[in-house]
Image (cartoon, rainbow over all chains, first blue to last red; front, side, top):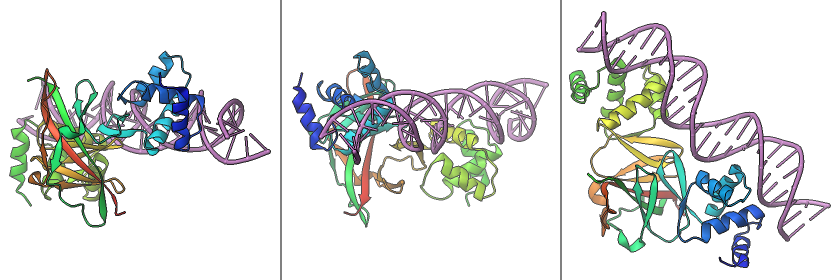
Length: 136
Length: 136
DNA sequence: ATAGCTGCAAATGCTTTGCAAGGCC
DNA sequence: GGCCTTGCAAAGCATTTGCAGCTAT
């Protein structure tokens, strides 16, 4: 597992106190390769791992990490928010049926002919979601 | 305004009884060019126009129209669902601040190099959302 | 010491549902 | 008449918030 100090420094670097809860969630999030989590989802995992954290704190933490640029929030389903530990530019496959979200490498989808942003606005981000169904 | 019978036929064509509420909502939706509405939004408009409809019926109707292929549901914000009267292939600008959704003509965004759908699945739809912020 | 965090429980906001009354065919 | 629809109010869910107690610095 990634050394304790690396996570600690990462939190300090973005100005977040390295509390027990944040350290534990950061490990779950960043020590297992790229992943997509929901709050509910991460909370359940924490419980299983024996980490005591309230659901409210999980929500707060996910949002703080997102604001700090450690996570990216993905909106594909009105029913729940997903958070992606992969903050590099890339897009997603979304399995509507199972709710599973899957990364597509950044180079593997090219968006071109993008019109200019309307006056007074700037493009913040382009999200491409490829929605999947079970095979026909 | 579009003749009454045209809306009537359109509803019948998809197997929905042309009730007073559905007729009125269909007019609001389809007689004013392409538009994006939320349930709340459409309900308020109906009230203003003097059409008595409950919010529950607006939700039901929007979903029925979507299933019937008269509308397309757009997910850009976890907080609310948008419905688009433009069912042709096209993408969207989304003003995060105001919640305004704007169509981009279908030809005006080209997505290429799309990887094949994972085994056992088929691509149902590709959604491109260009998120905007106020000018920097 | 003190500003920042956490947990709980209550509150919120959108959306859905149960069921009795009403409307279309 | 019979089945589909509607409306209301209540229920549901994911998420947020208020606030008292705890903790990192």
